[in-house]
Amino acid sequence: MRVLVFALGEDDAPRVVQFARQLGAVVDVVVAASHLSSGAARIAGVGRVLAPDRPCDGSAEAVAALLASLASEYDVVAAEANSLCGDALPRAAAQLGAPMVSHVVAIEDGALLHPVQAGRAIAATRVDPLFFCTVRGDAFAAAPLGSHPAPIVPVPAPPAGDTIRLVRAAARHTDSGLTQARAVVGLGRGAANPAFSARAAALAEALGAAVAGTRPAVDAGAVPESALVGQSGRSISPDLYIALGVSGAWQHFAGVRDAKTIVAINSDAHAPIFEWADYAWVADLEGALPELLAALKR
Ligand SMILES: Cc1cc2nc3c(=O)[nH]c(=O)nc-3n(C[C@H](O)[C@H](O)[C@H](O)COP(=O)(O)OP(=O)(O)OC[C@H]3O[C@@H](n4cnc5c(N)ncnc54)[C@H](O)[C@@H]3O)c2cc1C
Image (cartoon, rainbow, N blue to C red; front, side):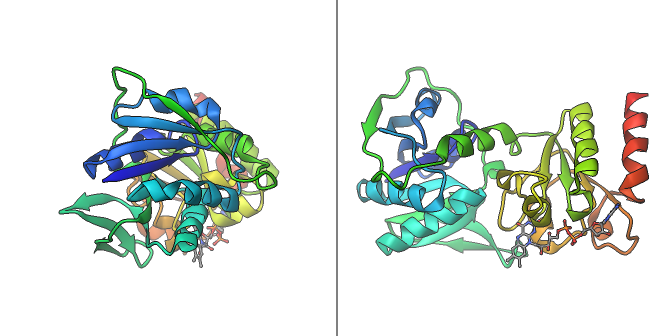
């Protein structure tokens, strides 16, 4: 079994490689941009690193074109379940008429386990090669570093015209550090204005936490798309998740259900998030955020 792992940033490849190793596979990594090659080459179990001859665009269309151009040598093409890969891999699969499995959390007796119905149930799916899949980063430990770096092999990138934005997109994914963060501050629509998000950023800094967001917070520009958490974004499992102005829609909860402790601050005492929060504070963020920051300083 040959697996091609797509690495968008520095922190996603080791976990997807670990998934691929569990398939008992020969694993190659294709990086989105060549500056990621040497990091990918140091991961144990990687046979070759494929480096596009120019940075691949951060759009789903360009990533799909890159993966579709390489897939014929492989049985499986896998990437982390983030929003860009969640767009790109199904496109590549559709181009090749191959099956797609999303948000894989484990492998059991050769079947891929993945949540369905927004996380209410786990399905076991068996698919014949070639198939594409996205893998939840928080479900697999990072593969260790190997003793010898894998060879780096240049590959042609898809035709020019498809390539524009990748380096910035890759940097954003690398910066988020969401999958590994032990504490995460989550911004909802109620915290998405500039005054609240600046205080939320100060709170995150004081706690050494990463910042995530709901779909409305992403759409409002308060957090980048790469930090979207939930059914259409990333799944995270920090020790502490602090939800600010988040209503608690199931599609968001699907991405934070594995957090060990959830703290919610919301001005609406009937917000659904209070049904699953461990600590609930019914308060307006206008007063609650300065109070929390002052308490942390003390
Ligand atoms: C197919 C599908 C996939 C989706 N995928 C995702 C996903 O991956 N991630 C995701 O997040 N969403 C996703 N959604 C959207 C999801 O259904 C919700 O609409 C979204 O999560 C709600 O975000 P929110 O809690 O920020 O906003 P809202 O539901 O509008 O809640 C805002 C909250 O802020 C509180 N608030 C407002 N002002 C203040 C204040 N001053 N102080 C304190 N509290 C305040 C309000 O009381 C309210 O509870 C998806 C939807 C669909 C249909």
